Image (cartoon, rainbow, N blue to C red):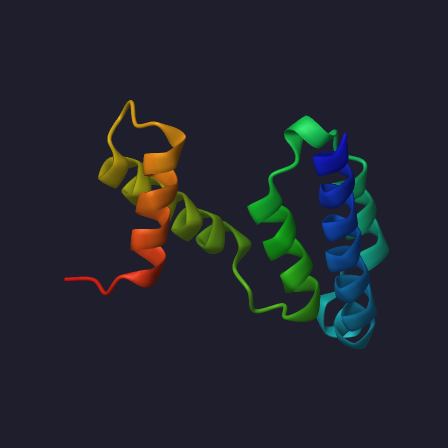
Length: 107
């Protein structure tokens, strides 16, 4: 229950920021930010894609953001990290590979 509460608080904070900033860009974007937020918030917890939700909220602020391209980029990063860790890697190794991916310089 505790992690669900944290998730809801994080989503709420993202939503507030997105709605407030979207008011200024609403005319250019021609999307009702309240409808976008409502759509995400009414999605059952087990079906919310946090990356897609975050990018969707970002798009309310900056209409040039390509949500699908962002999701593909995140999926590719996750695939690379899984390959680095191996198919049956324990979660600690997966976390170590995530850290390596983020913080170590590439080739």
